Image (cartoon, rainbow, N blue to C red; front, side, top):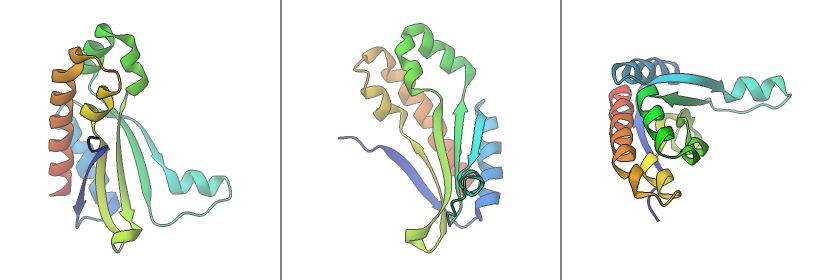
Amino acid sequence: MAELDYTVATDKPVDEAIQALQSALAERKFSALWHLHVNEKLQEKGFHLEPEFHIFEVCNPAKAKQALETDQKVGYLLPCKIVVYADRNDGNRTKIGLLRPQTLIGLLGDERFRDLATEVEQELRAAVDAAAR
């Protein structure tokens, strides 16, 4: 089976990595539609989680429109998900990662999405790599 995620490590602290990610996404015409600071949300519910974990749902409107016009079932996979977290298994080193669009789109079994998924994944990988530098 194909790899589910693409994840890189960075020496940046989590907050700085988040800022760098948002800038890198904007340069590629992606934006964060939603940002969940998991630790804060769990704390509101009475649960403590360490270290930091953030989930972003990101979108490029033109590419989302193209995908949805091809087949609305792709909506189950939208928007793309990126995480930024301190990895407790790696000395709390900051990691930035994404669920790979090429792997996810393979679940639909529709070849019409192959090129678009490849393009989106390349752009998101470039954003993650830029944020990590």
